[in-house]
Image 1 (cartoon, each protein chain N blue to C red):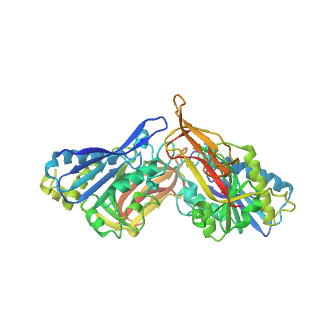
Image 2 (cartoon, rainbow over the protein chains, first blue to last red; image 1 turned 30 degrees about the horizontal axis):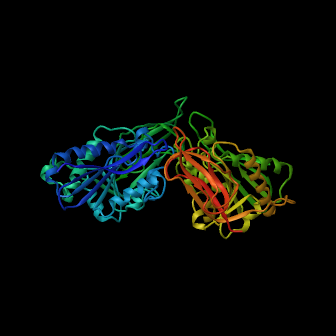
Image 3 (cartoon, each protein chain N blue to C red; image 1 turned 90 degrees about the vertical axis):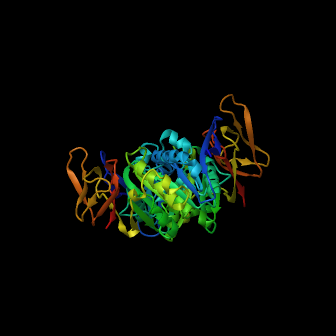
Length: 307
Length: 295
């Protein structure tokens, strides 16, 4: 059965133009219902690419699906149109508006409509991408008390799984849907070689494990799927600069570091003088690395998963 | 007066960020007033600078601290947020001395805010013009002492975010004085706000012989008017204007051609607190806010 392309909600602009938020539904049985959503912020195109890669595979196995998969390729099309993080005009961060309001302004209505649409599904997975200032190793983030979601996320072909005690922010989708699996990776506002494919393969594998798509239809062997390093908040270490200047990284994302290794230097931008060498507090791997070099004191420059 | 660079932050390619605190008088009581948490809210900055001019001439009883412009870098660019990383300072209180740049600035503002009474100066957004008014918790009668046109008393849980919420969590008596628009200097509104601050300082025991306070309309109920669809909103009322039931508040027109699309009329009497001044509106955006009088 071909998939359905449906309009979740249409937003009328002041000029009379309409902007639609779409849902692609693939359905083939009475098995689990999975939702994949991307583009909550307009500067995260990686997630949209991943959903289209997943969609192409689902089209090829549409007659053998054993559940329902809804893809929302871009929840914030106006922002994506500009490559901007927030909803243009209103300058509202859609990921601070959940669960939304049906009688509110456009971002609130999109959030409320989405929440109504996904009520009762078995699993919601958000492709969150990355902030434009950082490069992230592909990883998952799940609430630490959500044991089923944690178990599922271990099959998502990510390098790390961060089980966190607190959601990313008030009004985030993660707060509104506690069982949410968030997938992150790459660089904000960019497509990153390799990351999209890893995440797409991970989603297909996760859906095979959930019984939505047949395992024999996976475009790779299950043994190729990575098992993540699972860490709690206490095993995630943030390294912040003490000085302002230009951050020059000395490591790459997902590189192994030992305690005391220099992860980067802060230099004075005009003279080039080294102001600060930033070191790893313990052994681990680089989960996130600052890509935008201009920093102030206190900026996060590197995030490690320890152990 | 002393001008203390209360906090500094090393800034690449330019001079250091410095948080200035102007202090007048000495001893108790102590009051702190803060403006410019959002860089484009310059009416509060101007109101505090007017107040500073007055305090230079009349030494207060006790100590008055003024932080006229916290988000200086945002003010330079007429931006609400901290320009470097586009963070909203008001979302990170009480801050963190070891955290990100905005968290460090927020923590410094908290440290600089000493005394029992703390007052924050705000303006409306850059799209909305608001009448000078006070926002205070339901249980705080102090707001009436400002003698501003309107006092909006709100349930405490609606005031537990941002700088105001952090002050309240720290046990301070805290309120907001607010008016005008973001991104522009509304001289009349700023002067009205400054006069209100003088009355508040007199009420707190810092100043003598304040001018009599004009009557304040106290409200706990706001009526928000929104257009069902987007378009070009033309207001028919001004901030501070009294409206009656059925009065036309504004008209939504087509942006191209100007045909009337929707009329917005008052469903209850009250005083206009806020009016949309940037006319291009999206569906369900606020266009007029009317305060219903409870006094």
